[in-house]
Length: 460
Image (cartoon, rainbow, N blue to C red; front, side):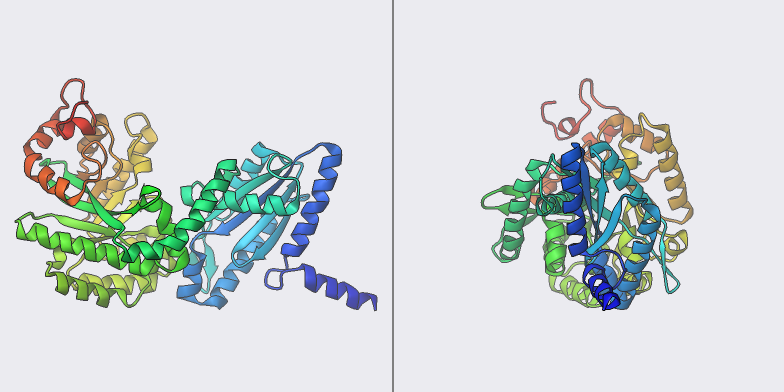
């Protein structure tokens, strides 16, 4: 009878997919460590980890492949962690680690080790898949004195890390308030789509040779009746989580195309860029939907640019490439956004029908002080030009940064130094009034002025 009892206990306490301890076993172990640590006056850390964009893997590659990925992740993390740390799978794409005797600093080091362990791509039936994750950390006794309390707060910290794209985050009381607001926004986002609460602003992209604006990036904003203007990093993740990302993206594209039509009528020849998420890029319906919107708005397809990220492409490169080629055949342009932050293969880059790469602001903003970033930016510019692509620098916030980009032969730039995002009305006026003044400012900033205020003719 004893073997059967042992087998039953194992079935109840272990995750059947990964053979790791399950949520029930983890909770019991966490309670055990809390009692021992309370007696010894020591800390216990709980780390909760959620994979980023795992739903896209299941959606595009199937649940069997998703299960294989989860098994490989469990194996890799098990080989990374040493006792007395305990790894468990909580369910879905969520894992957790109990780290006895581990304070805040040690927990941060442990979280960084876990994220580094995931950097090497996973081999799924010959396809190399990159995985990124977000980790939330909660400590006993600082953040809670029970297992349930710590699990709830580590979960909040994990979502804070996911929103900030910081890799990991330590729980703070502010996250509790933010979590409540997040739940409220999640329920109201669908209503915002139909109640005219959304609007677009446009950030200019400036050619560094001529000083003229050649394009704009359309950025969505939410005019919330209670919280005021909300930026996209607060609600786009909610849209992806609730499945609203497809209708939200189509709303952005439709609104941008209507404005493109107005600019065409005014004789303003600029390209308008719209960001696509991984969900959009993997949708086989998107090319047909875009074609219908272009026709209904009477916009030349060459006036529309779609910005995609390396990570979105690499979820399912074959499907992404097929959809990109269909849309490119319609005359649409493409840019790779946040270039340098993903792990895409150069073999894919040369096959993609893109005309532009945008260097991520994390490399651009520090080039006046950081020689390593100068090397990265210079190499990226050379790579882009050798592939026949235009290179745009994002996040330009000073004249010195712009001067160095021009010296490195970067084609164009966007950022607060040129202009903050503007409404359609303000941008139309800005385009009409600013080109000559902007060209002079790019050559040499006026005395005592080196920011957006000088470019818009406002007091510094």
